[in-house]
Length: 280
Image (tube, rainbow, N blue to C red; front, top):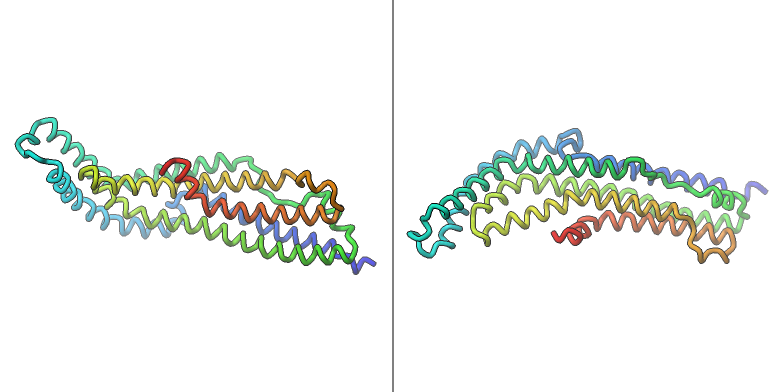
């Protein structure tokens, strides 16, 4: 009897959950292509712009301090150090440090725009829709009561996992914006160390590496989502050929859920992967 066939209900549940995942992925791509300047209609960035002058003032003061520290630590004979080429080198270093302190936000904005455009190019024309294969859908519809009951229980568990993954991937992208917004004002202080010697200026090198890892993280996230979606679209593994049709469908749904979980793991580890790839 039709009342004992749960195939339509299973398909409705899966379509609802996969629709939720597709919406989350679309939102993720939209946010990854968005500059932190425009995030949340520019509200968080307005706060950063309001406090940035304070950090610039502190950084400008520290430029002189770090310059003196660097000069004193490197100068063995002050008379010998007062040659024209040495003075010119120190003045260039001092001028560059002050310029980077005053203009570090403008430089960061250029990186935000470039990375956003790159993510837009990657996601343009890319199919990110997760759907149930028509052949597998037909098998689910024709399942008997026993098989459909098992399938319904499994589909419910997988649906919970997919929903959790959907919220987690959004959280990861939101957290990336938070990291970037927090470290932007600190750039003025980090660039002030450029006026010191090599040991002091190591701070700005570390800051730039972390900043680049956070910014390029968006590209790694986009690539992870695109590639994992390609895994899902590739169909069933070859070893499932000897299984019954309903068992193949179970494996198919498990593989989709596993790939979704793998997508979330790749997105979460994007910063570490980016740092290792670029040696940052």
